[in-house]
Image 1 (cartoon, rainbow, N blue to C red):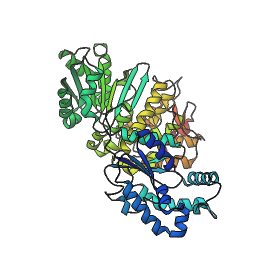
Image 2: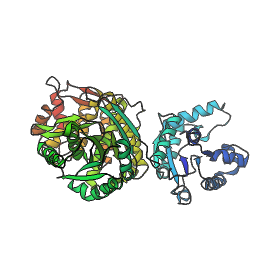
Image 3: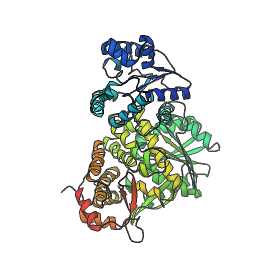
Image 4: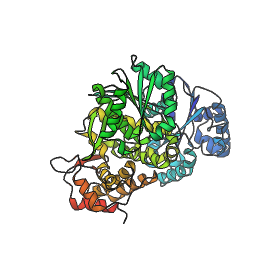
Length: 551
């Protein structure tokens, strides 16, 4: 069951609150209360007539009373007027800020709002002329009033951009917010040639791990938890206890943190531990940690006894939205990173956003690089979605950086769904999966040139370099590149760094993803999204890389 008893939709006129509330209420089997309709019934006249004849003060007072009454009921979706949430009074814990009320802002650009309100007025036969549409510069008036209200709209639990989304899709998104706090059900199913994954994404999902492992592998009796020293100290006892309470025997394999463990020696140590401990094919390997642990544990699970059951329980943001999903496992070699590995889909992925609250700030920040990256490549992915993640990240930045729910859980679900659809279309990275490497060609080189930067930080710098290379190649304008750098920086990520220029250029030239001797670059396209280019001017590459180097 969800913790929420009611949903309040807020936002400017023309964002689809009324239509969305009806669809959502029908899906939930709840009642719907439209405050504007209730006010028209109370006064016996239309909203514009109430404003004109009774004044805004009287209207707002009645509106607040209707909202108070609505918020005392349960199993209801409330559609509010555009200004109903634009006062401090309504954001008390007795009203919109109550713990049992999910508040969702539906947001759109002024141009979208103007177009929708104009179309609505035409459908109504111009019987009522909205004041905002009268006179000169209606878009300017909408923009000014919207900017006044945005600080109040931003107090909601989550903001959903609706410019290019139908009401039925918005209702589906809101419904998924409730599911994230209900009984465990997979948020995403991934079906690939090498196997399938059921991916659970919700706060506290770790506490259901024993039950879920038992359901998926009824004959399993032993779990080998692989984690690093930091994660084991923070979460090892708790996760072990959860599995033991389900009747499973637990062995813990702890490796040193960082890339040094992700090699032949590190894999050998795990093989020795498991084989000396008489691992059986019915046993499970559970990766508890970040990307390094997931890659290493996955490779060992894929190869020990020719393959045992594998579970991903990522604890870092980077692993949650990227490395735990898609089946890539591997270890490093002296010749380069991830040169030895296998595609091995984990049948079960358990993503608990509450793990993120224990991450060091720098570790958490680097994870946002992959989230931001997904928003840039979204228009080119086979997700079947309208490209809206970039707008979502802009509007929900404070909520996401503060790890507030349900915004954080929603962001994780959308990112994992995007990556899953890409993997399903191209598991072996022969086509669209390569789009996930946006920022990685330069990023990997910057990371390897001195290891001053964490992976996500290097990717952030790499995305900035790739966007500037896209400008130099005539694919996008400088304004678009600037907006990309602005969004990257707004999540606390670097857009430049210290490195040796010639060394980075050299490493780019030996990138493992070269085809026919040419480096593959994922670059931005004029109309959104990305594509792959292998005919990039070397002087442009050098200029772009130099532009992100701190002198």
